[in-house]
Length: 212
Image 1 (cartoon, rainbow, N blue to C red):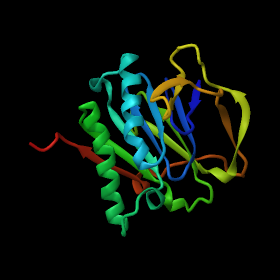
Image 2 (cartoon, rainbow, N blue to C red):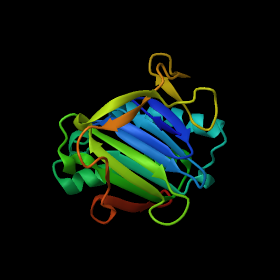
Image 3 (cartoon, one colour):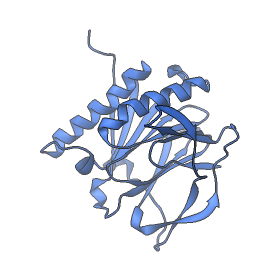
Image 4 (cartoon, rainbow, N blue to C red):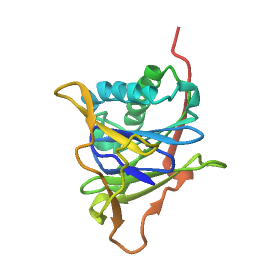
């Protein structure tokens, strides 16, 4: 099964989480040995309360910081961040994801994909697939959003099973059921969806303990 998380949506799935049209947004995934937990964060100002809501949602369903083996993050550094150089934008990204790790009281490997290298017109579809053994712990696939379409097939189980999702409502500051059942993704160009070149495009750093 799979879930596809749109803006402000959060959920979990044993196998696959997809994020449509990431541009200013960030797709963030926590990997455990048994599942993936994800949240689609919008602009940086709104992301902090939504991540806090996501962590509350996850812990309410039994996730603990000790279960998380890796954090994954994808976004367009050039669009999401306003720093003047690529090196500076990388540091801003590190600071943002570290702030989320602090919310969880978590330390470990954070792995990031900067989608700006693709120069997408309308954002990027990014998909994470859980790997039980070997490296990477998640396989990452992507396609420019303009080269994808919806399948029209419902894929989210809203009955509280392992694959489920909710939406964060900024007006009420509360969770609500996903307003629509998200649909799968079709790749509309030859060659299909592409797997990330991990050696050249995956940024990895270790989030350590907070400073004294």
